[in-house]
Image 1 (cartoon, rainbow, N blue to C red):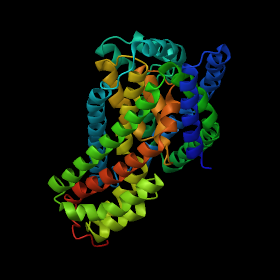
Image 2: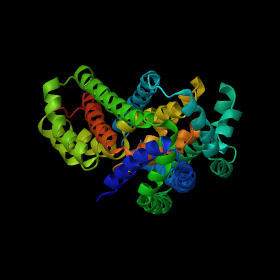
Image 3: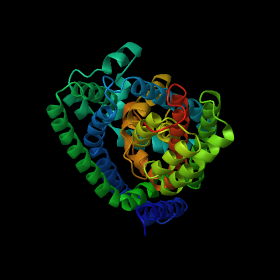
Length: 418
């Protein structure tokens, strides 16, 4: 049985048991969630433990994976700018529409009050730190950490990511030998951290079950409905953004919609089933060559980097996951927090591991940056299979649409090899 199946079974079992306990009268049954919840908290802490050593080297490596503008210049700059525009657009779209969509998710006052209490206990310093940030000027000042080590200790992810971006750019200016030596160290740290994440995920069924039982006990039947609602909203939002990418390819890339659809379909099918944009890359390259006749510079440079780095579907899902948790726990998300969600979402998408379910790993720093509880992250992990299918297909669609736009400004429009 795969990890995904085991986690899903644990989620369903936790939901059923928690709902049953909610209606039980025996004290022993009612005390059971109190014994299970610490196990879930330990698992969440273990997952949070991996965030900083995973995200920081990933951001540094991502910056250095981009082409050196001194040697590639034109297409490198355009690729990065276009990718950032799409990612920011996706994150803003998801945050604005997602906030409206989640407002229709109804949780009764009693359950919301109980969850708010547990949320504060679970998030601790993250929520306290968010409450201490007041005003736009203080928020902007806090973006640049005076002490990156202290920022790491405090779990201040946005300043850490800003530091990692700056440090990664500084590495690009080093001599080749020094640069490669540092990047080898960063790669080793990232690989080791990813291994640690995989070890933590082995215990995911236990953690998810231990988190779901007390959650379902507090919410009763509303818990199952809330999870289904979240999955439907994520799928719908991914489909909506993918449809917009078709219009981008048509309006800005000047590509016939049918031709673009034929070029994307095989890669979308692979991405949807394998839940990996890297696995879908050969199909993307084939469609870009045979159907769209994109320039070789776009095919050989942009598409591989886009498949490995630019994860548009994650920019859709992460804000929805954050807003879903906020709604589930009855916590109001203020305007400044919405801005933080958009910014941190875009930056963290560059550090999403290229594995199925990788987005769930990096949603934790977004929650921390926004001052929201992370205790329910196991719920998202448990139901992530379906959302992961839709967001990976969205990765591919956005990458192909961006490639058509870039192709308009490349001289090799016939796609001939050079």
